[in-house]
Image 1 (tube, rainbow, N blue to C red):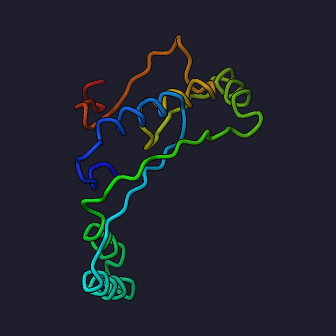
Image 2 (image 1 turned 90 degrees about the vertical axis):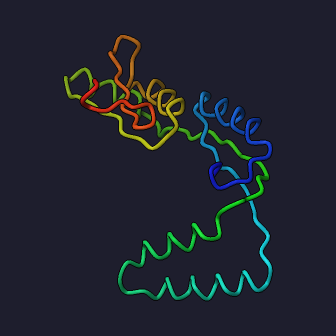
Length: 143
């Protein structure tokens, strides 16, 4: 979302989002963009055509989203606790004790993933935790 937004006040929002993720909270960033009636009608007609496409429909819809979801004005963000179901940490601990290997694959921010990993007992402080992150230049070959 932040890459689609106008650049104003992003540093403050990014600081808050980092704080929320370190607390293991799920976040939702909210933004908007005003369109003229002509822009909206033109986009809507093209979007409806993309919806009817019989080939490459997902790509066409994604392109339509890209077209309109830019230069958004940030409104703010929400953060909620994503509670685990009862018994999850205990079950994961039993699985680990049984010698079953667990991998964590997530699209979460690193801080959120770590927080959830430790709260679920998938991760422990005595583990050698390896982080694969394209943006950091770490991959399987570098581990």
